[in-house]
Amino acid sequence: MALLFSSVFPQQWQQGQRMVIYGTVFLIMTLLILYSSNSSADLYIAELLFQSLSLHCRQCALVTSSSHVVRVVAHSSVFRVVRKPAEFLNRSESPAIIFWGPSTKIGRDAKGTLYRLIQRVSMTYSNLSFFFISPGKMQRFDTLFQKETGRDRKKSQSWLSTGWFTMVIAIEMCDNIKVYGMVPPNHCGKRPQPKRLPYHYYKPRGPDECVTYLQNERGRRGSHHRFITEKQVFARWAKQYNISCSHPTW
Image (cartoon, rainbow, N blue to C red; front, side, top):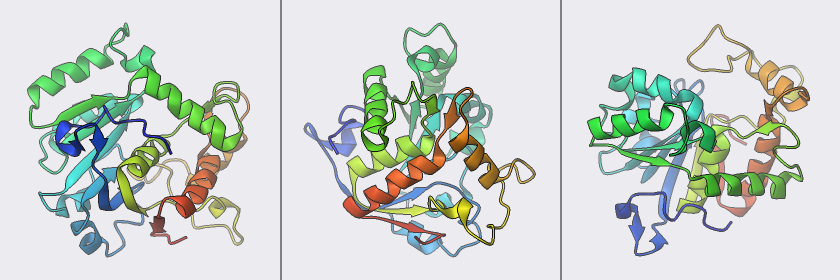
């Protein structure tokens, strides 16, 4: 996979114009299973920890201070991050936040308030590094989606998930990735049906995970996330890029 982000990350994570490649890297996709597992010892040895989460990960606080922690945040979650600075912005274990979204939402020239809001927050919390994925690089995510799935993202009315962005960035920075909390692509088709779990780990009474996955995968009216399609791609990448999945293992 060609490098997409050599200019996105802080200088201390680069060597000249080349990316630093990390060894043991953990990517946390959800906390439902992570909270019930004894994974803190594993997290402690991670050189780099990616969080594809929109709420604070309590167990991530167990990571050593020498580890780099990166949170990947969608444009739709910016206000949630800013409204809870104690969880996201005052914590030493989260030194970098990468925001992604369409240029109309978070671009420098956008008429909306998100870019200016993030800019103001970055000046207040100088202990953190804030990054945007540029419009040109956003397009390369779309191109990668079409290459891997055969679908034009816009024509198929598909939205990319934060997990897609997090996985691609992790692959480009890391030589060994352990993913926590991501179910396999066939999970929702198993018999007997899987135990009901909420789609959002922070909304236990919210919509069911599998119902949400299947509705999005099959949806044709309006735009939808293609979570199952993305997981099929991740399964192929796992064979190419030294990726393993735990809790559940697959």
